[in-house]
Length: 362
Length: 96
Picture (cartoon, rainbow over the protein chains, first blue to last red):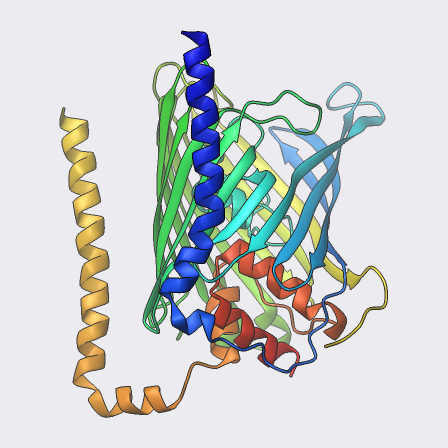
């Protein structure tokens, strides 16, 4: 029985690998537009790069102060125009007072390899990714997690749904634009992750898919994620999301609903920059953020989710000194039967990118 | 049973909304036929691709060192699942 299963697994692996190799060529052959695309003559350089974000956050949660310095460098090494090695490592310190409210600050710096992957950019429709990659589930994990991107420093309650155990998967992923038209594009990601307990490569056995449609004219994106957790208790997780940046307003609206065995919830976030208001220019770089979220546990909650109904509202005020440096602040209040508490965040974020060494320009 | 019905109803509504939005956009384009002809004459620019896609997640950078433009665009193409044509337009726009 076991031998037959092994044989079956081996055949499945061969079939998947063959499909991964053959699909890009097939799709490329089907699309003469991409085949005839010529490399434009420009001066873009393809030098290995370090980019990423750094932040210092002063957090007060229920009266307990935590100092959180962090840096997340991203290493990007291109090999020609079609292969990219990319990796992000997170260094985050958590420092709290020895007796929580009194005494000197003590803590530890945690180091995590968030992803380390090789991408083969085969064509418009297929990008093959292998290694440790961020799980494409909902809006948050893959897109909004970096400290310099997120409008509020605290992640939504439901951000752990569909990202067990480490937010990353070890294995293969196929992604790309399934359909690209001037008015809209349909994008997809599909992956299989193997279980791993190797240090810095921890991942769960999962499989899933994420797909979204982006309407170019409206600047509206709506999508759907599904994941099957394939170890211990096999569970399904589902997310639907929407993201809208209207052309006429400096507004960013994002919302997501998540459902899993451990509970369901949603969050709605709006971020408005005062660029268009008739106020002194120095104040126009301010951004006002609000987020509302609710979570309702099922089967006792757990897996980093609350075990009681939880509601939370957040208000944020960010100020962009430049496009890469900003002051961030937020106030949140969490309501649950375990007690209500206030969460304050004040700090600064910085985004950087620079070449690793002088390179050729094309 | 009720939850399944609600979920199915939600998916149906989402699908109808998406299809409605696409149809509305298509019908708007059809109504403005001269514009469509003009749009066809004016191909999509790198600036449009930049403005449409970067804002979906973050504040776009005001400048990128030319030596690393290609690398950054490759990274963003992977992350944002951009097409090859969009990548080329972005490169032309960011590092002309």
